[in-house]
Image 1 (cartoon, rainbow, N blue to C red):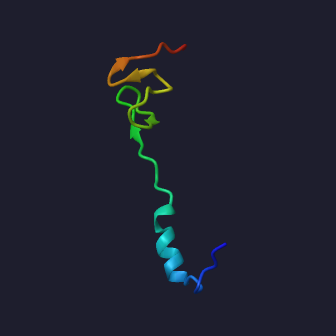
Image 2 (cartoon, rainbow, N blue to C red):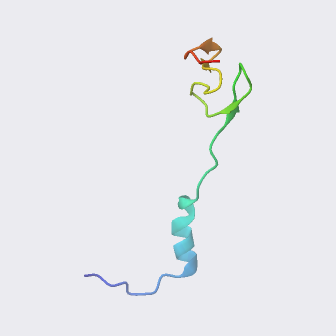
Length: 59
């Protein structure tokens, strides 16, 4: 089993892990009712997608 020749410094460790940070999710408002939703998805509140009713919702 291989063993590291030198101790990995804190800087090298942090540089390697720089891409592991979480990115905030993209949000937008529904064009029909104004509810905040993720893009490219049907609105859960009103059932509209791109200005057209995609899913019938119960009132």
